[in-house]
Structures are given as C-alpha cells and as structure tokens.
Amino acid sequence: MTLLAHLYFFANLQVRSIFFLRLFLCRIGLCPSEILIEIFLFPFQLTHFLFTIFIGGSQLVFLLHERMEQEIVDLGHEIERQERMDAMEREMAAPTATPITEKPDNKKKDEKTGRASDAYKKAFWDQVRAKDGVSYEVRNMLSEGTDSEGGYLVPDEFEKTLIQALEEDGVVRNLAHVFTTSNGLHKIPIVTTKGVANWIDEGAAYGESDDVFGAEQIDAHKVGTIIKVSEELLNDSAFDLEAYFQSEFARRIGNKEEEAFLIGDGSKKPTGILNATGGADIGVTAGSATAITADELIDLYYSLKSPYRKNAVWLMNDSTVAAIRKLKDSNGQYLWQPALREKEYDTILGKRVITSPYAPEIAAGAKTVMFGDFSYYWIGDRQGVSFKRLNERYADLGQVGFLASKRVDGKLILPEAIKVLQMKAGTTAAKA
Image (cartoon, rainbow, N blue to C red; front, side):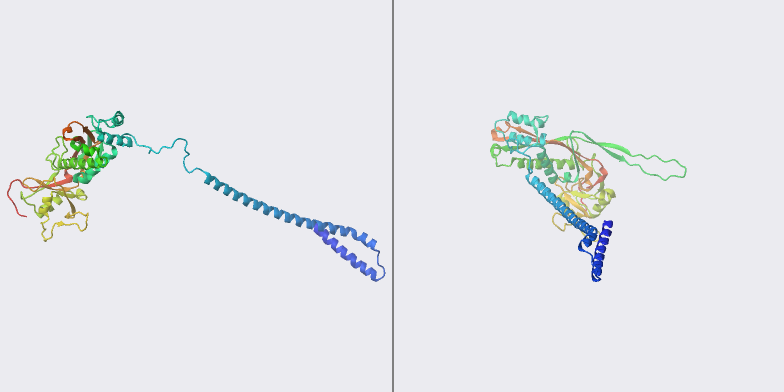
C-alpha cells in the first residue's frame, strides 16, 4: 500500500511536469505532437488509473465489510430475541400440574397411619354411634387401637385435645413437668446427696466427696369413669359427641388427678405433694391451729433455698387466700398485692398466688400453704386413652355407657424444691 502510494504520487507529479513542459515548448515554437505526448504520458496515466481503481476498490471493500459486520450484529440480536420468545412460549406451554392419567379422585389422601389416621378416627366415632353393633370393616380398622381390656384407644388427635384440656383445667398439671411414656414404668435418676469441695494444705491429699445417686420410679395408675349418653343424642348427628366426651373426660379425670397430685397417698394413685412420705418438706409450723401470721409466710418464703425461689409460686385453697389477704407486715403494708390488669396474677412477697380447691383448708395439723418450684413434681402419662362401649348395661334406661380410662402417675422427685406451712396440731387459736 505504501509503494503504490509513492507510485501514485510520482505519476501525478510526472503528468503535471509533462503538461508544463509542453506548454513551455509550445510558447517557444517547439510544440511536440499530440501522439508523442500521449505515448510519453501513457505509463504515468496507466499508473494513475490503476491506483485510482485500487483506492476506490479498497473503499468499496471497506464499506461492504462494515455493512456485513452490521448485518451479522443485527442477525445476532434477532437470534437472541427469537430465543427469548421461544423460551417464553415453552414456559407458557408447560403444564401447571401433574397430568391426569386416571379417573380423578376427589377424596383426600390420608398420609397418616395407625391411630393418627383419618380412617381410624372415622371408624372410632362410627363404632361409638353404631346402633346394631360394629361391622367387620370397622372392627378391622380399630384393631390397631385395641387395648388389653377390650376397649379401643382414642385417636391420637383426640387424645392430644384431652390432655390439653386436662392441662388447662388442672393447676398442678399446668405447673408440673409432664412427660409421656409408652410403658407403665419409668425410672428417674436423682442426686440425693451432692459432693462438696474442700480446702487442701500444700501437699495434702484430696478429700473424697462424691455425689450420691438415687432413683424415683414413676408407675402407671389407672383412673377412669363411666360416661353415659342417651340413645337419642347418639342418633342425633348434630350433637357434637367428640366435644362432649372431651369436656366430661377433662372435668372428671382432671378433678381426680388434681386431688391425687396434692394429697394422694401413692397407693394405686399418684403420690401427692403433701403426702407424709415422698412429699414436700415442712418449712414452717404455724403457731396456731386456726390462723396464719405475716411473719410465718415470710419465714416460709426464706425456708426455700434460693435456687428454687426463682420459679417459685404459692399454692393454697381459696379460703386460705381469704385469710391471708388481711395480713400486713411490720410497716403496715399488705402482703397481698392484687393483679393490676386482667389475666395477671395476684402476688405475695412478689410471687404469684395460685389456688386449688383440693389444697387443704386451715385446720389443726393441716398443710395449708405450699411455696416452691412445682416443675420438680413429675407427671407421667402413659400413652393411650381407652374408651369401651357398654351396649347392654344401661339399655333399660335408654342409654349407652362408655368406660373411659387412662393411666398416670405423679411424684415429687426433689422434696426440698417445695416447702409447706403446716398448722399447729390442736384447737387452740392464736391471733395474727
């Protein structure tokens, strides 16, 4: 390209020089012929012509190349746009659900098994309402929940609602540590004596002080009731039989449990918090058989070790609360502090007060006030609540009976976690 440029420049210069030379010779009368000039200029004109064609062709090639590049870019953009359109069409054409390959089934699929399944639940309530005995299909479905006494275990969902109702109605159950066991025996390891550290002289031997371990055993005591329902209510589909069983079971079983958790003697029933054996420790003995003083409540408060006071509550009978509400400290301030807002608790010495109708009333020798951390009272529910239908027992009354039972046990695993105030034995009254 550089060589051609130099030749082009040289040819132009020579042509211009020849024209000027011809003009000069013509003026002095020596003008050469036209043919001679053309022959002399032909090489230079040819060079000029060829270079002009080359330059023009190069520009044309450049323009064509640039146009081709632009067309390639435009074509790439078109391809990308088309690919986006194709992807969008594929997405719009894709199925939104699993294709139907068989006859539609509107029934809800039951993924649960055993007593948790909907089929078991339906079969259970079908046999409860059955008029003429239980069909083979229903008995077959209920075979998974047959207990050892010929009854049927309630569905899992219903059992959970029963236990929840017991917790809502039961004071002790709501405060205690509750667990579920699959068998009737559960051993709980506890530390009966804790080891201590000692000061040691230089070079002296370390003294031995090991923890002493024991075990508390949670058994499974049976508690039950008979719930009678008229035949008319059983045949009435509008009657919510499930809700009725739930409320009656919670009320009857819950009351019996609550009584045993407080004053049960451990014989075929739970060991109560106030039982002489295995129950709470005596923190204070009142100076009177019929009255409680403010100082005695303060003494009871501090008789409980500080680690247990963190989550401690007061538990007593309503009649005991009525007497305590009148007590004042040495500064004339009431020990009782009422709740400031709804759903809050009344307090004594900053700790909430809870009442139970099964806590003993003020009487000679009675353990009337409990203070401590009730989470150390353990309640073991054996899995499975049983219902058994009695078709003939109350037939003459137009009723059908249902035996409802469950197994449970309760025990205070650390007696020092709860302290009680025991009234003075005898009948001599002492003023607060």
